[in-house]
Length: 69
Image (cartoon, rainbow, N blue to C red; front, side):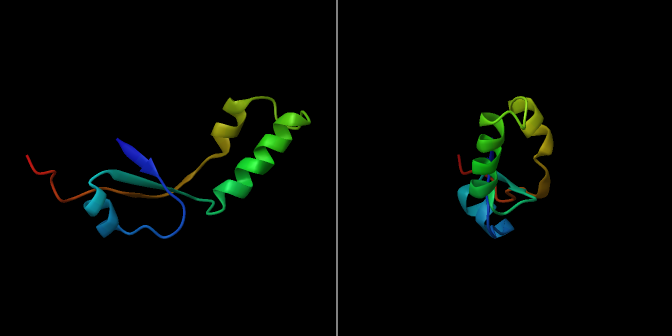
């Protein structure tokens, strides 16, 4: 399982919640999502796949503390 976040999540937080974290290149994902929705509505963008191709990973954080049994 992985978790996409915005803002400044650190590796220690990945350890605390015990899942891998993917931080996008663009921090303002809410504004970007609104712009993408508007682009789809007026025909500037063709489909969701085109939008997915624009999403880029800035950093991946892996939980290093094992989950207790």
